[in-house]
Amino acid sequence: MRRLARAVARGVRGRVGVVGAVAGTALGVVVVAGIAWAPSAVPGSLAAGPAVTAAPVTYEDYDDARETPFTFVTSPSEDVELRRAGTVTSVDCAAGGTLTSGDVPVTVDAAPVVALHTEYPVWRDLAPGDSGPDVAAVQAELVRLGYDAGTSAVVDVTTSAAVHEFLTDRGAPASDAALTRDTVVWLPEPSLVVTRCALEVADVVEAGDTLLTTGGVLVALEPAVLVDGLAPGARTARFDDVAAPVDEDGRVTDAAFLAAVSSSPEYAFAANQQDTVPELAFTTALTTPLRAAAVPAGALFGIDGSSACLASDGVPRRVTIVSSSLGSTFVTFDDGAAPTSVDLQVPADRTAAGATCT
Image (cartoon, rainbow, N blue to C red):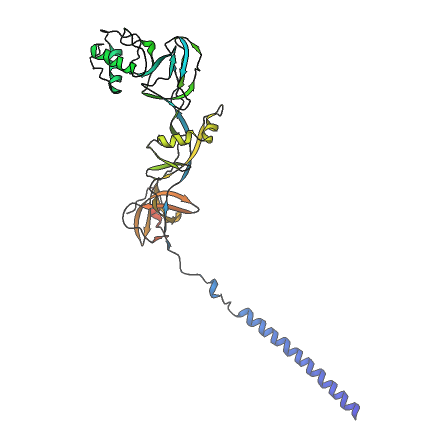
Protein backbone atom coordinates (compact mmCIF):
# COMPACT_ATOMS: atom_id res chain seq x y z
CA MET A 1 0.00 0.00 0.00
CA ARG A 2 2.78 2.39 0.82
CA ARG A 3 4.44 1.76 -2.52
CA LEU A 4 1.17 2.47 -4.35
CA ALA A 5 0.71 5.81 -2.49
CA ARG A 6 4.24 6.98 -3.36
CA ALA A 7 3.73 6.15 -7.04
CA VAL A 8 0.45 8.11 -7.17
CA ALA A 9 2.12 11.12 -5.51
CA ARG A 10 4.98 11.13 -8.06
CA GLY A 11 2.49 11.09 -10.91
CA VAL A 12 0.54 14.01 -9.52
CA ARG A 13 3.66 16.12 -9.05
CA GLY A 14 4.74 15.43 -12.64
CA ARG A 15 1.42 16.56 -14.08
CA VAL A 16 1.44 19.73 -11.94
CA GLY A 17 4.95 20.64 -13.18
CA VAL A 18 3.91 20.23 -16.81
CA VAL A 19 0.83 22.34 -16.32
CA GLY A 20 2.86 25.04 -14.51
CA ALA A 21 5.41 25.20 -17.30
CA VAL A 22 2.72 25.46 -19.94
CA ALA A 23 0.99 28.19 -18.00
CA GLY A 24 4.23 30.16 -17.51
CA THR A 25 4.98 29.96 -21.21
CA ALA A 26 1.55 31.21 -22.10
CA LEU A 27 1.86 34.10 -19.66
CA GLY A 28 5.21 35.10 -21.15
CA VAL A 29 3.72 35.17 -24.63
CA VAL A 30 0.91 37.41 -23.43
CA VAL A 31 3.36 39.84 -21.70
CA VAL A 32 5.59 40.07 -24.80
CA ALA A 33 2.59 40.64 -26.98
CA GLY A 34 1.42 43.36 -24.61
CA ILE A 35 4.75 45.13 -24.75
CA ALA A 36 4.81 44.92 -28.55
CA TRP A 37 1.35 46.44 -28.90
CA ALA A 38 1.59 49.07 -26.11
CA PRO A 39 2.40 52.69 -27.27
CA SER A 40 5.93 53.99 -26.31
CA ALA A 41 6.00 56.84 -23.76
CA VAL A 42 8.46 59.84 -24.36
CA PRO A 43 10.12 61.26 -21.22
CA GLY A 44 9.02 64.81 -20.47
CA SER A 45 12.65 66.04 -20.47
CA LEU A 46 13.00 64.99 -24.14
CA ALA A 47 9.78 66.48 -25.38
CA ALA A 48 10.05 69.38 -27.85
CA GLY A 49 9.77 72.79 -26.15
CA PRO A 50 8.25 75.96 -27.53
CA ALA A 51 10.03 77.54 -30.53
CA VAL A 52 12.71 80.13 -29.62
CA THR A 53 11.74 83.33 -31.40
CA ALA A 54 13.87 85.94 -29.55
CA ALA A 55 17.26 86.26 -27.94
CA PRO A 56 18.36 88.56 -25.11
CA VAL A 57 20.67 91.45 -25.92
CA THR A 58 23.76 92.10 -23.80
CA TYR A 59 25.65 95.39 -23.78
CA GLU A 60 29.28 96.25 -23.17
CA ASP A 61 31.70 99.13 -23.66
CA TYR A 62 33.49 98.40 -26.92
CA ASP A 63 36.79 100.21 -27.60
CA ASP A 64 37.82 98.33 -30.77
CA ALA A 65 41.41 97.92 -29.49
CA ARG A 66 43.80 96.92 -32.28
CA GLU A 67 47.52 96.19 -32.55
CA THR A 68 48.45 98.51 -35.41
CA PRO A 69 51.88 98.62 -37.11
CA PHE A 70 53.33 102.08 -37.74
CA THR A 71 56.27 103.21 -39.85
CA PHE A 72 58.59 106.09 -38.92
CA VAL A 73 58.58 109.54 -40.49
CA THR A 74 61.84 111.36 -39.76
CA SER A 75 63.05 114.84 -40.56
CA PRO A 76 65.52 115.15 -43.44
CA SER A 77 69.19 114.97 -42.55
CA GLU A 78 71.16 118.16 -43.20
CA ASP A 79 74.69 119.35 -42.54
CA VAL A 80 75.31 122.75 -40.94
CA GLU A 81 78.51 124.14 -42.42
CA LEU A 82 81.11 126.57 -41.14
CA ARG A 83 82.15 129.50 -43.30
CA ARG A 84 85.30 130.30 -41.34
CA ALA A 85 88.77 128.73 -41.44
CA GLY A 86 90.94 128.36 -38.37
CA THR A 87 91.31 126.30 -35.22
CA VAL A 88 88.34 125.22 -33.15
CA THR A 89 88.73 126.69 -29.67
CA SER A 90 85.41 125.61 -28.12
CA VAL A 91 82.41 123.48 -29.03
CA ASP A 92 78.91 123.61 -27.55
CA CYS A 93 77.23 120.66 -29.26
CA ALA A 94 75.50 117.51 -28.04
CA ALA A 95 73.83 114.78 -30.05
CA GLY A 96 70.15 114.78 -29.21
CA GLY A 97 70.27 118.43 -28.19
CA THR A 98 68.92 121.40 -30.11
CA LEU A 99 70.59 124.20 -32.03
CA THR A 100 68.53 127.38 -31.99
CA SER A 101 68.89 130.62 -33.89
CA GLY A 102 71.03 132.95 -31.74
CA ASP A 103 73.08 130.14 -30.13
CA VAL A 104 76.88 130.00 -30.30
CA PRO A 105 77.74 126.37 -31.15
CA VAL A 106 81.47 126.90 -31.78
CA THR A 107 84.33 129.39 -31.56
CA VAL A 108 87.07 129.47 -34.18
CA ASP A 109 90.31 131.24 -33.28
CA ALA A 110 88.51 132.33 -30.09
CA ALA A 111 85.84 134.22 -32.10
CA PRO A 112 82.19 133.15 -31.65
CA VAL A 113 80.32 131.81 -34.67
CA VAL A 114 76.59 132.47 -34.24
CA ALA A 115 73.74 130.31 -35.51
CA LEU A 116 71.23 132.39 -37.45
CA HIS A 117 68.00 131.31 -39.13
CA THR A 118 66.78 133.34 -42.08
CA GLU A 119 64.14 132.60 -44.69
CA TYR A 120 66.63 133.66 -47.38
CA PRO A 121 70.24 132.46 -46.88
CA VAL A 122 72.95 134.95 -45.94
CA TRP A 123 75.14 134.56 -49.02
CA ARG A 124 77.34 137.69 -48.78
CA ASP A 125 78.81 140.21 -46.36
CA LEU A 126 76.25 142.91 -45.67
CA ALA A 127 77.50 146.50 -45.67
CA PRO A 128 75.62 149.76 -45.05
CA GLY A 129 73.46 150.62 -48.04
CA ASP A 130 73.04 147.00 -49.25
CA SER A 131 69.50 145.93 -50.01
CA GLY A 132 67.65 142.83 -51.14
CA PRO A 133 65.78 139.78 -49.89
CA ASP A 134 68.74 138.63 -47.80
CA VAL A 135 68.74 141.95 -45.93
CA ALA A 136 64.98 141.70 -45.37
CA ALA A 137 65.42 138.14 -44.05
CA VAL A 138 68.11 139.21 -41.55
CA GLN A 139 65.94 142.11 -40.37
CA ALA A 140 62.93 139.81 -39.88
CA GLU A 141 64.93 137.31 -37.80
CA LEU A 142 66.51 139.98 -35.62
CA VAL A 143 63.07 141.44 -34.96
CA ARG A 144 61.81 137.95 -34.02
CA LEU A 145 64.75 137.65 -31.58
CA GLY A 146 63.86 140.97 -29.96
CA TYR A 147 66.10 143.47 -31.78
CA ASP A 148 64.88 146.64 -33.50
CA ALA A 149 66.34 146.02 -36.96
CA GLY A 150 63.65 147.73 -39.04
CA THR A 151 61.81 146.36 -42.06
CA SER A 152 63.19 148.49 -44.90
CA ALA A 153 65.11 145.65 -46.66
CA VAL A 154 68.04 148.11 -46.67
CA VAL A 155 71.06 148.03 -44.34
CA ASP A 156 70.46 151.40 -42.75
CA VAL A 157 71.56 152.87 -39.44
CA THR A 158 68.80 151.05 -37.55
CA THR A 159 69.74 147.70 -39.06
CA SER A 160 73.47 148.19 -38.47
CA ALA A 161 72.86 149.04 -34.81
CA ALA A 162 70.67 145.97 -34.35
CA VAL A 163 73.25 143.67 -35.94
CA HIS A 164 76.03 145.16 -33.77
CA GLU A 165 73.96 144.63 -30.59
CA PHE A 166 73.05 141.07 -31.60
CA LEU A 167 76.68 140.08 -32.18
CA THR A 168 78.22 141.82 -29.17
CA ASP A 169 75.61 140.17 -26.90
CA ARG A 170 77.22 136.89 -27.96
CA GLY A 171 80.82 138.03 -27.74
CA ALA A 172 81.37 138.29 -31.48
CA PRO A 173 83.73 141.06 -32.68
CA ALA A 174 82.36 144.03 -34.58
CA SER A 175 83.58 144.81 -38.09
CA ASP A 176 83.32 147.58 -40.65
CA ALA A 177 80.67 145.54 -42.46
CA ALA A 178 77.26 145.31 -40.84
CA LEU A 179 77.43 141.51 -40.98
CA THR A 180 80.11 139.19 -42.38
CA ARG A 181 78.90 135.84 -43.60
CA ASP A 182 81.66 133.90 -41.79
CA THR A 183 80.37 135.23 -38.46
CA VAL A 184 77.25 133.09 -38.71
CA VAL A 185 76.21 129.55 -39.56
CA TRP A 186 72.94 129.49 -41.44
CA LEU A 187 69.99 127.45 -40.14
CA PRO A 188 67.08 126.51 -42.41
CA GLU A 189 64.74 126.40 -39.36
CA PRO A 190 64.59 128.44 -36.15
CA SER A 191 65.51 125.34 -34.12
CA LEU A 192 66.97 122.00 -35.17
CA VAL A 193 67.69 118.75 -33.35
CA VAL A 194 71.35 117.74 -33.48
CA THR A 195 71.99 114.14 -34.48
CA ARG A 196 75.80 114.32 -34.87
CA CYS A 197 78.54 116.70 -33.74
CA ALA A 198 81.37 116.75 -36.27
CA LEU A 199 84.04 118.89 -34.56
CA GLU A 200 86.22 118.77 -31.49
CA VAL A 201 88.40 121.34 -29.81
CA ALA A 202 91.74 121.83 -31.63
CA ASP A 203 90.39 120.65 -34.98
CA VAL A 204 91.70 122.71 -37.88
CA VAL A 205 88.82 123.63 -40.16
CA GLU A 206 88.27 125.17 -43.54
CA ALA A 207 85.28 127.09 -44.87
CA GLY A 208 82.67 124.55 -45.92
CA ASP A 209 83.54 121.97 -43.26
CA THR A 210 80.60 120.38 -41.44
CA LEU A 211 79.97 121.67 -37.95
CA LEU A 212 77.13 119.29 -37.10
CA THR A 213 74.35 117.25 -38.66
CA THR A 214 70.69 117.72 -37.95
CA GLY A 215 67.61 115.73 -38.91
CA GLY A 216 66.76 112.07 -38.74
CA VAL A 217 64.43 112.95 -35.89
CA LEU A 218 61.12 111.12 -35.47
CA VAL A 219 58.43 113.63 -36.46
CA ALA A 220 55.45 111.32 -37.04
CA LEU A 221 54.19 107.75 -37.03
CA GLU A 222 52.00 106.66 -39.89
CA PRO A 223 50.09 103.39 -40.37
CA ALA A 224 52.07 100.71 -42.17
CA VAL A 225 48.91 99.09 -43.53
CA LEU A 226 45.37 100.19 -44.21
CA VAL A 227 43.24 98.73 -41.42
CA ASP A 228 39.70 97.89 -42.55
CA GLY A 229 36.63 97.67 -40.40
CA LEU A 230 37.59 100.17 -37.73
CA ALA A 231 34.73 101.27 -35.53
CA PRO A 232 33.76 104.90 -36.19
CA GLY A 233 35.12 107.52 -33.80
CA ALA A 234 38.31 109.25 -32.67
CA ARG A 235 41.14 106.91 -31.71
CA THR A 236 44.04 107.02 -29.26
CA ALA A 237 47.43 105.30 -29.54
CA ARG A 238 49.26 103.97 -26.49
CA PHE A 239 52.91 103.17 -25.81
CA ASP A 240 53.73 102.11 -22.26
CA ASP A 241 52.09 104.80 -20.12
CA VAL A 242 51.96 107.45 -22.85
CA ALA A 243 48.87 108.13 -24.95
CA ALA A 244 48.34 110.35 -27.98
CA PRO A 245 45.54 111.12 -30.44
CA VAL A 246 45.48 109.50 -33.87
CA ASP A 247 44.57 112.02 -36.57
CA GLU A 248 42.10 111.51 -39.42
CA ASP A 249 44.86 110.07 -41.63
CA GLY A 250 45.85 107.54 -38.98
CA ARG A 251 49.06 109.43 -38.08
CA VAL A 252 50.47 110.19 -34.64
CA THR A 253 52.35 113.49 -34.28
CA ASP A 254 52.16 114.23 -30.55
CA ALA A 255 55.62 115.43 -29.43
CA ALA A 256 55.59 113.71 -26.02
CA PHE A 257 54.49 110.41 -27.54
CA LEU A 258 57.16 110.60 -30.26
CA ALA A 259 59.83 111.45 -27.69
CA ALA A 260 58.89 108.41 -25.60
CA VAL A 261 58.97 106.15 -28.65
CA SER A 262 62.24 107.50 -30.08
CA SER A 263 64.03 107.08 -26.73
CA SER A 264 62.93 103.45 -26.33
CA PRO A 265 65.13 100.40 -27.05
CA GLU A 266 62.34 99.04 -29.28
CA TYR A 267 62.67 102.07 -31.56
CA ALA A 268 66.47 101.84 -31.63
CA PHE A 269 66.31 98.18 -32.60
CA ALA A 270 63.69 98.74 -35.32
CA ALA A 271 65.42 101.81 -36.75
CA ASN A 272 68.71 99.90 -37.16
CA GLN A 273 67.25 97.02 -39.14
CA GLN A 274 68.76 96.65 -42.60
CA ASP A 275 66.86 96.05 -45.85
CA THR A 276 63.45 96.47 -44.20
CA VAL A 277 61.13 99.38 -43.58
CA PRO A 278 61.37 100.01 -39.82
CA GLU A 279 58.09 99.79 -37.96
CA LEU A 280 56.61 99.24 -34.52
CA ALA A 281 53.16 98.11 -33.43
CA PHE A 282 51.12 100.18 -31.00
CA THR A 283 47.71 99.59 -29.48
CA THR A 284 45.07 101.94 -30.84
CA ALA A 285 41.54 102.09 -29.48
CA LEU A 286 38.49 104.32 -29.50
CA THR A 287 39.05 107.37 -27.34
CA THR A 288 35.45 107.09 -26.13
CA PRO A 289 34.24 103.46 -26.17
CA LEU A 290 30.93 102.67 -27.84
CA ARG A 291 28.03 101.18 -25.89
CA ALA A 292 27.62 98.19 -28.20
CA ALA A 293 24.99 95.44 -28.21
CA ALA A 294 25.97 91.80 -28.74
CA VAL A 295 23.32 90.11 -30.92
CA PRO A 296 23.21 86.74 -32.73
CA ALA A 297 24.51 87.08 -36.27
CA GLY A 298 21.36 85.35 -37.58
CA ALA A 299 19.17 88.16 -36.26
CA LEU A 300 20.58 90.61 -38.81
CA PHE A 301 19.11 91.14 -42.25
CA GLY A 302 19.43 93.66 -45.06
CA ILE A 303 23.19 93.86 -44.50
CA ASP A 304 24.90 96.49 -46.67
CA GLY A 305 28.49 97.11 -45.62
CA SER A 306 28.42 98.13 -41.97
CA SER A 307 24.71 98.99 -42.11
CA ALA A 308 22.10 96.35 -41.28
CA CYS A 309 18.65 95.77 -39.83
CA LEU A 310 17.22 93.69 -37.03
CA ALA A 311 13.82 93.46 -35.39
CA SER A 312 12.70 93.65 -31.78
CA ASP A 313 9.14 92.66 -30.90
CA GLY A 314 8.39 92.76 -34.60
CA VAL A 315 9.60 96.35 -35.02
CA PRO A 316 12.53 96.70 -37.47
CA ARG A 317 15.53 98.76 -36.32
CA ARG A 318 18.53 100.06 -38.26
CA VAL A 319 21.93 99.33 -36.73
CA THR A 320 25.60 99.86 -37.48
CA ILE A 321 27.86 96.81 -37.30
CA VAL A 322 31.06 97.56 -35.38
CA SER A 323 32.56 94.08 -34.93
CA SER A 324 31.96 90.33 -34.94
CA SER A 325 33.34 87.71 -32.57
CA LEU A 326 32.51 84.03 -31.80
CA GLY A 327 29.09 84.03 -33.44
CA SER A 328 28.02 87.35 -31.96
CA THR A 329 27.87 90.63 -33.80
CA PHE A 330 28.39 93.93 -32.00
CA VAL A 331 26.11 96.69 -33.18
CA THR A 332 25.02 100.18 -32.22
CA PHE A 333 21.47 101.36 -32.74
CA ASP A 334 21.16 104.32 -35.07
CA ASP A 335 18.23 105.82 -33.18
CA GLY A 336 15.79 105.15 -30.38
CA ALA A 337 16.13 103.26 -27.13
CA ALA A 338 18.25 100.11 -27.08
CA PRO A 339 16.09 96.94 -26.84
CA THR A 340 16.50 94.11 -24.36
CA SER A 341 15.84 91.37 -26.93
CA VAL A 342 15.89 90.82 -30.70
CA ASP A 343 13.77 88.63 -32.96
CA LEU A 344 15.37 85.50 -34.38
CA GLN A 345 12.72 84.63 -36.98
CA VAL A 346 13.45 87.00 -39.83
CA PRO A 347 10.96 87.08 -42.70
CA ALA A 348 12.44 85.59 -45.87
CA ASP A 349 11.84 88.75 -47.87
CA ARG A 350 14.11 90.67 -45.54
CA THR A 351 17.19 88.47 -45.58
CA ALA A 352 18.62 89.68 -48.88
CA ALA A 353 21.40 92.25 -48.86
CA GLY A 354 20.00 95.70 -49.40
CA ALA A 355 16.66 94.96 -47.73
CA THR A 356 15.31 97.88 -45.75
CA CYS A 357 14.31 98.18 -42.13
CA THR A 358 10.77 99.29 -43.00
